[in-house]
Image (cartoon, rainbow, N blue to C red; front, top):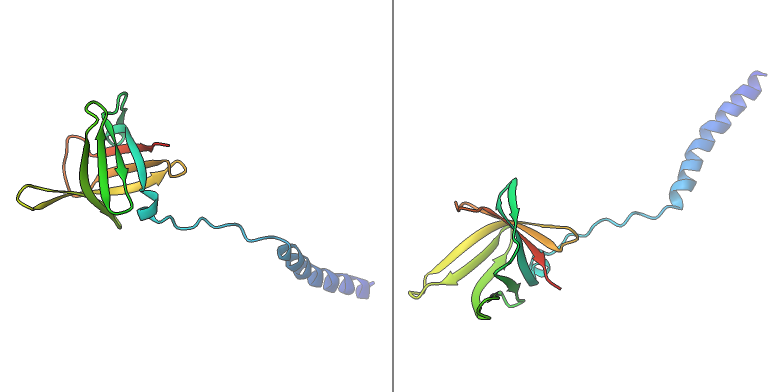
Length: 143
């Protein structure tokens, strides 16, 4: 009787690692989310949908225009009211930098912390090292 208990114990001790190995071999590794390149993700047209100071955000009912980030570091802003386009420059690294040259050639830069959300169809921007009446902006991607 003791030999049967010992044999069964040895059998189950060998069976457990083998079954784990077999079960694990059939599983595919889950697709890990790939890092999103913000320089590519920012491209396209964006319309302001919320504005405020987090957590007190208000929806924007009638946006005044849209921003279009172009691949050549040009930011084109369109005014719905006038139909005019305004051009700025931008670059993105750990922050989103938007700049405009003054008439004297001086570059004025506004910096934002950014966070892409909702399947990358929204971007949350927060003023970085600056104070404003509103510090937080949420933009919705336009199709």
